[in-house]
Image (cartoon, rainbow, N blue to C red; front, side, top):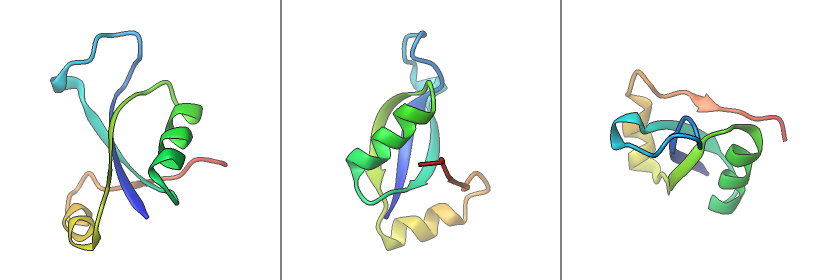
Length: 72
């Protein structure tokens, strides 16, 4: 499954909507996606959204779409 992860680049700064960024990640579940991001980055995860087929196709048309891979 592909997840869209909304995050703040740093845990040290108060979250601001203007600083929210996203990454796309393949994982078997939402908890696994959270663990992958939190164990491999210093990001402050705000929200994780599982993408259905239609949403994924839409996101793939975005110039910012890139699947992030972490070493497990």
